[in-house]
Image (tube, rainbow, N blue to C red):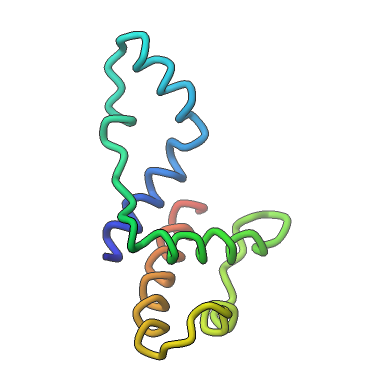
Length: 103
């Protein structure tokens, strides 16, 4: 599942700011590979995505500060230890993708 999340994150970091314009171009009949190749965010991964977005909101003024590992581990909605371990690995994979893109 990490690959699905990181692919979606990579697409978002690269193309989301242009998504409305890309959609308009597509409606006018243009070929828009970036929009056609947008990865799907599976329903069962939306909670992990939402946690990443929420944690990312506290990165600081530059927006490129790494996430605090303690914040990931202590996130209030992850109570089950197995789920916490899986989500931790997913969030770390997403964070690695974000940091690589920010460089």
